Length: 328
Image (cartoon, rainbow, N blue to C red; front, side, top):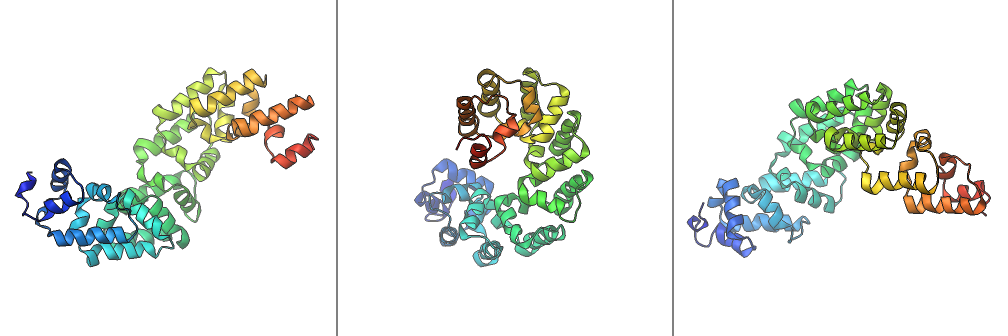
């Protein structure tokens, strides 16, 4: 659509004044036909309001470009009620602005028709009132999800893993709200099936869901299988793999290049230990390479202590470590 068709001094000149080029203006007009008839004064009023709630001016072109419909919405009918409702969820002003910046479409939803039923749904699951705002503003896309066809399916999936609806499921949702954005059939179920194939028990799966729900969201073929193959290349057998994953599930999503490889190579090539020791202490991968592994290995070497287990060496703070090995 040719932007010159807009009324002179109207919305086109508003966008030009805000730094948009013709291509961006055309794209917005295609996204939202109603923009053509919006007076410049109304667009300016909504723009100024967005700035007043804490959205940085340099971010406003991105926000409006992503959801140009925002400029056509009634200020006091739509924008103000939603912002004020979000602000009452026990959150900071900056968090509301951040949520709008990341997902501008949140402002296009109706408070009574969408946000209120959503809050009631989460409250029925036992999500604490203080956590509601944190959860929604961390993943503002939640407001666009259907309760019946999307969120209820996620809850049912978690319940089928053995998590109770009285508190356990709510803890998963609060810990990692992004889990609600994934398809049960295309992502969550294939991931849990893959974990089962590694030897994880139902209790192990419940522990993963409760403590590391982000793992359920990862792609099996792109992330989990490559990490598994890398571990197998070092000689870990099936029993050891099961111990590793159940003991420290994040091993399946840690960066091979930046996390797994340097730690394993240090253990084998520098410390002179067997990889089987990692299966006995999977949280080996949790510790920092330089601050914990290298420094403590060096200190123990200076004392001639070579026969302690990895857990004895790593699973304590610096004060206890020094006391345990008489380094003080």
